Image (cartoon, rainbow, N blue to C red):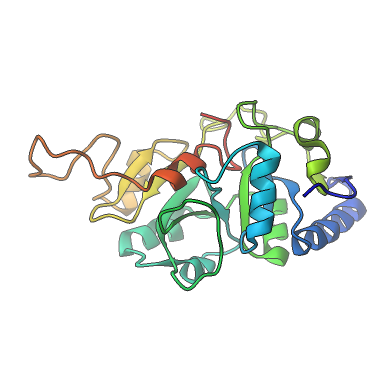
Length: 259
């Protein structure tokens, strides 16, 4: 489904910001896609509860259902509405590091009537550390979000760059300057979020990103790093397989360049 109209709003201007958020809210309600900034790069977003909207997002990027998008949420309490069997350590990590560069994979609530793609019953969740993104999420609710680019092309760091790739497949472009906002000068700027699989017997880092393992273990000492196995595990034991599709999708989520 192609958007009928396309508009760009300069969200550094208060009036355009208000108009842009209102237009974006309407577009999401109408199952259209929008482009929004996050704390690292720009993302293409759609209503996470609309199979049609998610399909439109995937088509805009030129990808299939085998790489479903992660879901950005506005507040910590939303996690319990979307995920089930949340372990205590996973909850502690969310409480400590959200909003921020941490993506957590949980079992999805089985009662949800959404269709993000081939998720194997899991969902990847994150709260972005970006004021405009949080303002949008507050009025729209959870959004399926992926990096604002055609698959295989560089992730957009401005809405203008996103528009060059996505054109009229997007209804609203919210422009608020370069992302990451510090121009890449910070120690973790430009790095993807760290992804932790919380669906197994042990929490496990499945991608190391901006959040260090040391910081994670200050909150959850038992988290396994990349390639690590629990103490006492047989040498020949293969690592537990993380939920494939959400992890792959998170490599191209709204907060990071393509892997």
